[in-house]
Length: 262
Ligand SMILES: [Fe+2]
Image (cartoon, rainbow, N blue to C red; front, side, top):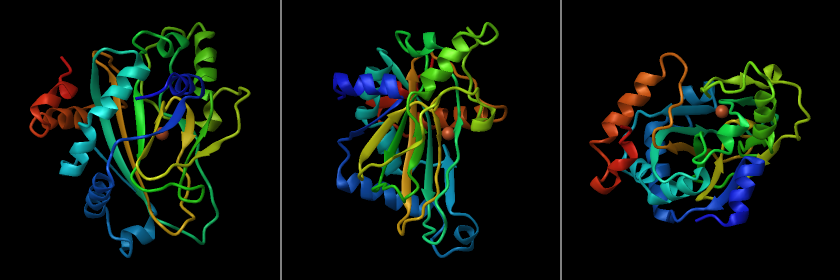
């Protein structure tokens, strides 16, 4: 699992990239599932838009294998200081190359916490995994992030009487709408195929363009301490809850506790 230094990096910087035990075959099978789920490179859809995503609407065996792989549960347990972990959500994205374009990126937070949330036992937060099914280099749509920004925002919230103690919820906030704090510069997350970035989307982060020549395959899956509730934007709860319910018919019997939210 993670070393003490890696856990400390997750807590301080908000993100740490580590190896996974996924095999080359498991990665290839997952990429093949993407190629079935997303439009082909020469399609009109891809000419129109380079980044394609899907959230919680697929049951392909190689993707179920990732959801229920014990590794992600174990790492979540470790970084969240939680005895019991449940699955939160999964989203896939495939970003097709645009080698002639200029590199650009977006920045936002998806959720904001207080320092008490981040330092709780268990932590009152979601653990996100960005699993890289193929290599990500600096040109291939690396996820951009500002190290430590989750804690800077948490400290700012904790010091604000109107925000201290407010339950965290998923709500995208663009960089220009965030408080002006002395944030570090954005950095790209690069990784080799099969590595995973363990992070919090309370960091200032965002997708970048793919100015390389190969597609980027990213799998964002997330877990939470059992019993932790995080409200989602209107209209998002039903699809997510239905997917978790449906997973009960697909996961192995010994992995069903991941979708037992009671
Ligand atoms: Fe995000």
